[in-house]
Image (cartoon, rainbow, N blue to C red; front, side, top):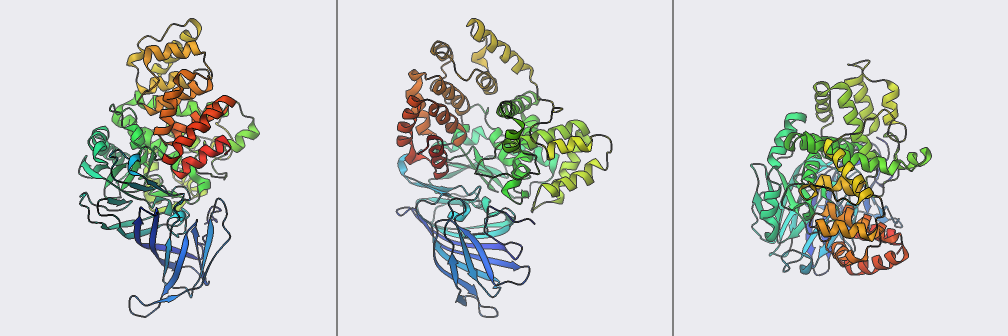
Length: 594
């Protein structure tokens, strides 16, 4: 195992195999306090355990006395390193290779992995809400842990909270929403630290299927359950393709709109944005994606963030197979074309040297700053290319074998490359060349021989867009377009349009104020880039109401490109910031230079 440069931990010497948490949620102080007890497996001589922390106050560190009665602990010496802006502080504990080490601590109100919401920021408006986001390296801000995906551990937790709130974790929570103020959960399967998750709020449960359901605020629960009604079918489809679902239940927690991502694949409890609940199931590919992580990412995990394509590239591929099986080939092709267009659009203006930075060969590590970049899209494209060359009759068993072979393990790109050579290339010689594989794995950019996904419906959309731009004739039938057709229309439009063109589209199709977040981010990005101030009030409302980074960051970037737009963006950000997650806040600050 190579050292993970995003972690201070030393797993070659010692690893956490089980974690016991005793946590108390203090909403008034916005602090989590308690203990983290690590069961350890030592691999060789050594007298220290190094854990990752960020802005944690360590109160005590103890080691279980060997051979003594349960509960007999001794104080251990420890030190915290000078904090690094990105990595936090190393907690170095001097031990005699204790089998168990307990850290008593409390978090900071500004913990980057936690968001504390006032009641006014929730759907109900009465009770507060708290949730975590541990990916990529934010678990260390609320638990002292070996915060690297190369280390996997099971865990158990006892959590106390105000009795009016329901507490859930990425674990076996059951399906009852009985509130006691004291909760016990268990995660029996080993997971990496970035999949540690917790939430507390006014939450109720709605059943979807025998193994699946939705947790949400009462105002959202039934709508979300209807939107995600196909979840059980998605599970069955994926099992038929790539092997059994190995996590017991698959539930979805719908969070307030400040959640910074579309979804987070926390095992047994996907966290999801409410922006995909729009009533027509057109954005449920987010659920397909997070479910796919139950195989790629959660089951077989990258061993460092340099190899994120192993998580996200495989997941995007599996997601597309789920969408195809449940919703049809046409939708799957459109979804793939949208993603590939995004990739190629970002690559086309770049030199080869710049491409090496933006989209390295998949075996090449790059700095990971909390965004997945382009590598995952290249990875998914690579897998689709392999499927096309070898056919599904050959490729599907290969991929299922990959998930079986590396189940509950953390691997790197070299591990995958070896498996690919042994189980696919050597068994089917002559189908692809070593040079072609190297073009995907080791060289920058998308190989020239890669074929782009095509969609007949998108060809028509492209023709109608060209006609509109040339003649002003609005696209016939656009009021009946799917979300994906609108995304294609807007994605491939010029970056800047005239006020007359925007006003024409808006008057005919009512794009300003749309409830569809994916359409809104494209529309408001055009509005901002074109300085179409007529729509600025709704644009500001959108940025204030939604905290999902995928939706808001492109709009901020477009505003920041002009002096007047940047001034407006700063005003909006000042108003929106109290409702943003710390991760979103940091990303917007970087864009605006504040």
